[in-house]
Image (cartoon, rainbow, N blue to C red; front, side, top):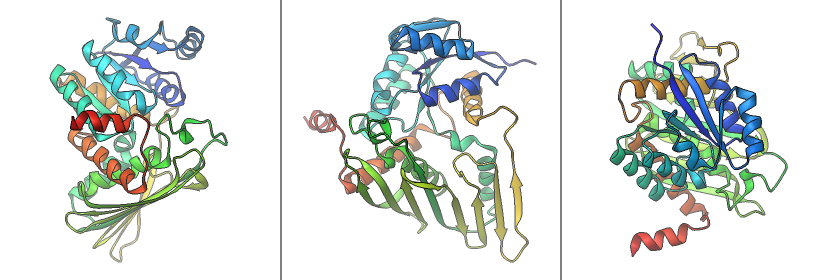
Length: 339
C-alpha cells in the first residue's frame, strides 16, 4: 500500500538544500511542492534541477503556500529561529538544519512555539538515522560492550579556501565548534546523556571564530567523551565507542558511515556493512523519519527528541563560553532575557 505523499517546501538553495532536495527525489512518498529563494533566477535554477513546480521569492510566500505540509529550513543557523517561527505561524511542520539555532535561548523559543502550535519539529541531525547508527543503538541496548566507558570523535576537514565562506564568517555564526563540534556533542549526548562537566579549548583564526576546537565531556556515570574538530586540517573523521567488554570502530566518515567493526573481548572482530542504496546520499533516512512521524500524528521524533536537542544547545553554549566565542546580537538577547 502506497504511503500518503508528504509535500515538502524548501527554504534556501545552498549546498545542504541541494543535497536534501536530491535525497527527496529518491523517495516515492515525498513530493517537492515549492522552493523559496531570495532571487527568482536562483530559485528557478534550483527548481529546474529537481523538478519543482513552484518558486517563491521570499520565504513568507512559501510558508503561506497551502500545498506544503512540511518545510526544510536550509538557511544559516543564525536565521533558523526567524524562519521556523514563520513556518509555525502558518501551521507548517519543520525539519531544521543543524545546529537548531544559534544558542539555547533561541532553541527554547523555537521548541516552545512548535509545541504551542502543535506542529512537528526536528533538528536535522541526519547522522542518527543511518543504518549503522541504528545498529549501534541495537547493540548498546543489548549491552554488547558492557558498561560504556568512552567516546572518541574526530571531525577534521579543510573548509573552502575562502575567508568569506560561512564556515569562517563571524556574522553568520561560523566556527568549527558549531559546524562539526555539534555532531560530536550530539553523538555523545545520545550515548551517555547530557554532560555533567564540559571543558573546551580552541584556536581562533583571523575572522574571529574558532578554526580548531576540542571538547572534553564528563557524563553523569563517569563516561568520558573527547571531541576534536578542525576546519583547517586534512580529513580525519573516525569515531570509537569503548566499553568494558570491547569497542566499536566506526568507519570514516563516522557521521555518515556505511560500515563499522565491533571487537568484543578476545573474539574475532565482526564487520557490519550497510552500503547506501544506489543514488542515495544519506539524507533520505532523516526525511523518512520526518514523514513517518507526521503520518503518525507525532510532533517530535523519539530518535532526535526536542529536549535532547535543547540539551545539546546548552552544551554548545557552555563550550562557547569557555573558548570566548560570542556572536553578534547575543549580548542584546542576554540583556532582554534578564530585563
